[in-house]
Length: 504
Image 1 (cartoon, rainbow, N blue to C red):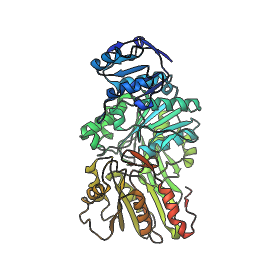
Image 2 (tube, one colour):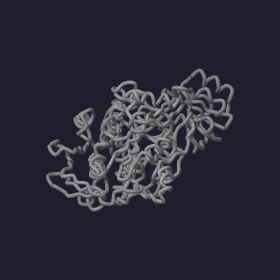
Image 3 (cartoon, rainbow, N blue to C red):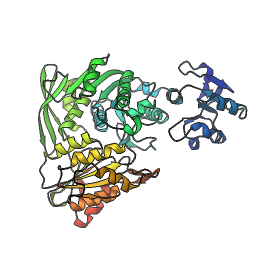
Image 4 (cartoon, rainbow, N blue to C red):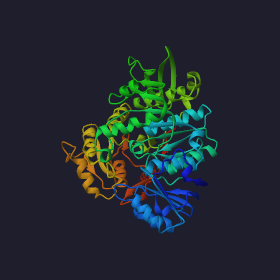
């Protein structure tokens, strides 16, 4: 693609050094990913400054370099005469806009839905993807469990755990459109909005699930965290809002200027969508939906009261896109859930293993409340300190589970560059009695899963929680392959049991 930099109306360059036009073949923000003809975006991060890698990027064939340092780029322009150097105020803003242009504005060819919230983003995104696809609007999804088209999981090397960097994001939009998908739903993290990964996208709908303490290792204050969550709705035509959320939902419902659909699990809340008469069976849930003065009977293959709220979020999104309740109720029993969210696996002697990667105190508390509604003998729960997250949250996970389970296994997820023992010790400070006989520690997630399974007896529930994502553990900058399911299957091989996921 030939880009005439001095004629781009939507991108503001403060200075252009060198040729004003280049034939651009790719985009990169990592110098080692630069290919001949690429634009290299020299981003300043917490640990690294991309300006230090410009020479390497040019040696690898970069045709243009975008950065914020006038002095550096002007100096380099005198050395690399065939390269274009562009000075901007914000590299990430520019990267997002050029990625959109480079991929022919593929996001505008799709209905786009953004999901934000401290808990529930992954589940809501999966429900929206499934529901809209069942309604014959083929929809892909982008988030923690990977990249999915309407029909299958796609292979991508993700640039971040949740919301991809803008370069990758617009590539995904382009690929989904090429595959015939007509919509895309994506998890939008607070960090993503702060880092401008979704800058320039005009979302057809934005969903708020809830708001509670998280990511303070990045945001430092709750005010900044909240501001970054709210930023998504400044880019959205329609909002779908959980007004049961006291911290943000009710405020957003009052301040959002466009069309909105509110949802609630409280019948007297005044929300547009409410659910009542919720009952659970071995294959899912039945409940009544109150909408526009009418009661509608609904069935969905989901477990947990909080997941009924997540279903309402998906239904509200479909209504906002023009679908009728009658159409929605017809396909709701076929709704698909995401990987690792209340995923029930049958073990020997009526053991049940539940995978749910709840990784905040609020999510853990809600999850355990729902699990306790099931029939079981004893409850074994594994929690984890996440090395790449806020250390202040770790004791709160312990406090949330203390006294709620017969056995508690404390382990480590994604230790990063930290000593796993330090993470374990931090979690343990949250227990009032850390040396209680029913609390034990395991220094790796694999050891934690095995310890949890080994502690179980017939008719027990083993609940494996926390943030194992993308099929890997992050250890000292490396992604080490990991699968809870494979560990479970291997452990129970000795029982001559063909463990299987329950059909729901």
